[in-house]
Length: 359
Figure 1 (cartoon, rainbow, N blue to C red):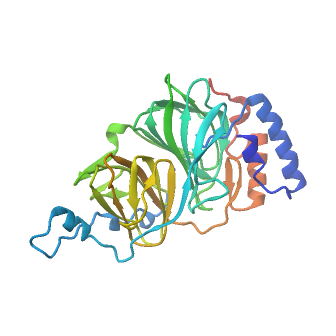
Figure 2: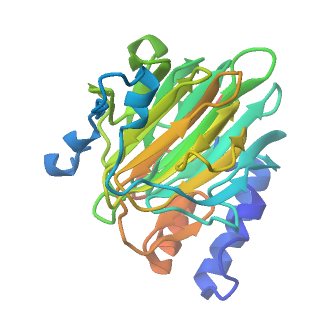
Figure 3: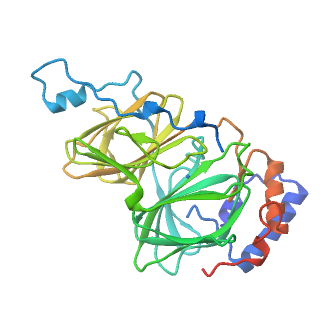
């Protein structure tokens, strides 16, 4: 974990918390622990069937296809209520990320804790570091990253692959470039509810070829979680979540339902597009757009180049969030307990004291 993230927590901590922070600082100096940014619940909490794509035909027989697409309307269309540029900052060991969610301008967006667009070349990376209380979703845009943890899990995700890691009660792992050149991707942190924070860790990993895809009227979508155009992802989301990678050709339109009551945002990967209202100013790459309430999002690509963006939404947990670096719990006492467990190697961190990766 980085020292900058360790300092985020309030300075008005208890004696044990301050002592443990000091001890962890010494551990960090010897083990080179760095925080990386770098995603069973009841069936009723799964992504609802309302995510089916809805199209409306124009009442005029002479209407063009674009008129028919424009006739799609949501009762409560979502608009952009906050726009911020993801700014570059150092992270891990020599790596650089563009952070949007997780900065002081947007500390979190329940249930989302952080979103980083990373760009990393050897020998930089994210050596051994812990997590507790949430999930990380790593989506490779270009290149490859190798992951290994203290439980013996090891693998490499490549362009288009997804790793959905539930840290639960505790994981210590490393994430390092597995190829030459620049490795690029997105990592999203998704909070877990209080009842799920101490579950056993688990992984869901999908190769690019296994990710559900659909195409309609010049719009392609890779469905990492949730449903679009009537196609559903096989990923199980303990915290109900939708996560989609859209590519829109010039002149195309998109009208994607989003469950009411969910928080949602867009992260633009490449190109520029108009979001929410057809006459809104276009937004460009590396911008995060927070969406207001409603039942769906409309997008227009009025440029001459393809537009690529991630659309992410999730059901709010409406629980207190107390974060200290890579630990995310509900109370300060639970954070103190997490740090003590990590230091003493117990309650999920038993293997941490005698393990180090090959990173």
